[in-house]
Image 1 (tube, rainbow, N blue to C red):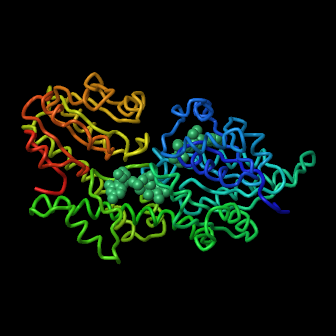
Image 2 (cartoon, rainbow, N blue to C red):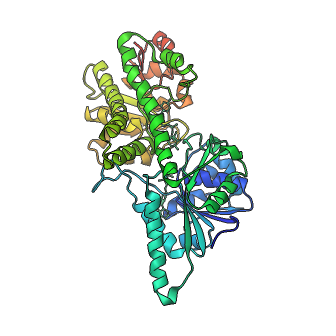
Image 3 (cartoon, helix red, strand yellow):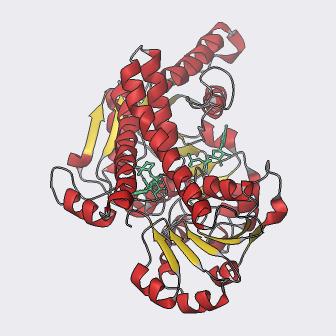
Length: 467
Ligand code: UDX
Ligand code: ADP
């Protein structure tokens, strides 16, 4: 049995991947009904909010797509059962965080949400269904999904009263979008990767993308290559960041300048100039998780040298965050007790409200442990989300979430710039200086601000990667 053409898509998971991806598919494929389902009722309510500022995720350009497609051919609901039943294609876009306990804890992804999605598909799907892995997953997850689906089909053919003819094709179609530029990345991808064994299913998924992506950009592989390529692409990107961050420390020690070095190195076309911006370490839901999955996989296959090589990319990332915390403490006379510190930026990068693995979290926690009083401001991250990151910490009275950068910086001893939001560049730094306690420090971990100008205003300035 097979699907002749795709008319109905169900996406399980209305998060940072599912929401934007399905909005772009809906916008380019008006003949397809796209249903995005989630078990989180509040999230679905927010996706359906008439006020587009209330969408659960902030992503430039997303609001326009939602305005165009929502309730036309794009629907957000909690109707998991019926949307699975009517789907020709089901995308699994659920969360896959690192396991907190048990076998592989701290390294491999927790697949419980993937497993529960597969069980729901097994239960409610009808006829032939193409199941697409969209979430970032460990290699060989497709096999897990296939096993769950096959087991349920076998169980059904045994039972006489429930002889439904369910069949499945499993496809891996990893997501390469970066948050903050998700819509642009989806609209104009470098490539679309589709892995699988069933050529007809690969063709049908390709046909969806061909509505707006040039055919030569669509790469087809076997399923394991597709799953592994996603991990490797993220590992390579993260490795570049750890490489440049390691050199930022050397620049500070030697008098070289990391931005000058980045330009000099990146203009070699063999190296390329992207992902060479030194900063407080990479954050986001993917890089650390994907590398740790790669490390786990290598160890599983006895490749300990390969595992150690990649694990060091994550180690350098933690080291970079930690050395920034230490350096702040050292410059503020070795104690933060009763000092007021403004944290500018809490998301893991600009143009997103996502805080997963944000360097701001670790650095803020380090400073709180030194008894600092933190005033945090981020243009898009909500108060609740910021407080939520410190839930298990004592001393939450030392934490204030502010409505503006000016409020956060008022009477502060130091400002730590941690996210590259452009609004921080355009602040009235003279006003901030006047309102701060002296000596007024700025620690610019994103190399966003004009050091010379700030020095002229009277600030003491530490900029990453230069002396
Ligand atoms: C990443 C991958 O880019 C994307 O392809 C994949 O699908 C998901 O993971 P994302 O985590 O959303 O995307 O953002 P990205 O732009 O890659 O940034 C990740 C982190 O690296 C951020 O904390 C960012 O600030 C940091 N970064 C990025 C740097 O420190 N320097 C750089 O030069 C680039
Ligand atoms: P990502 O960045 O990968 O998109 P998110 O955490 O933003 O991750 O989104 C994943 C979404 O998947 C969450 O909103 C979560 O509620 C949803 N989800 C997890 N498991 C299921 C499930 N079995 N059925 C429906 N939705 C699910």
